[in-house]
Length: 197
Image (cartoon, rainbow, N blue to C red; front, side, top):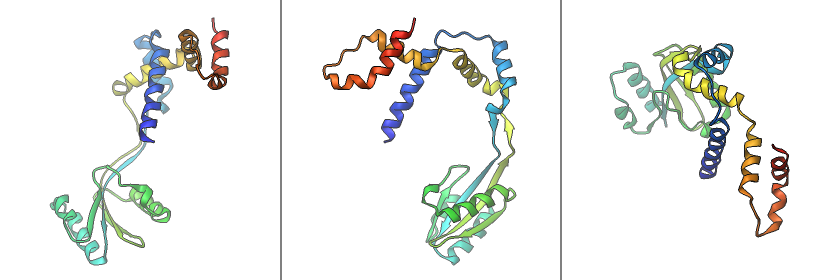
């Protein structure tokens, strides 16, 4: 599945690149596009946290103390019996393995807890211990760092529709099917290619 997704993303990027290859924009147009579409470049508020799991209450209390101390490295914490460190400095744990009610509680506490605070959330199997390492408020990405993305989005907006690019590619390739039963799947794109100038 991942390989199929990677291939699909690569094909989409290649199609975008074909669509915009001859589209020119000026620096002033890019700056204006950024100014008019600042919401596209919004960076949501973020919390970076260290998250550990403890299999029993005694291990959970020890982890709370170590995370509050701050001078104990995470390898030492992870080396404690019945403890695992699953999220570090914004690196997320596998949230799909967390029960939905626990996920909701964790998410709410992570979003609202102050920086450097440590809290626990018990679940059926383990106790989650969380330290909030840093927080960033919602902001807009500065133009200097967003300029490349803004230029690409503007070029895509000015470009010929990708469906037309694909139809033209299909038409110009003069594809012939050995097994004609598959040709029916391409009738729409073939018709679109014939209608293009």
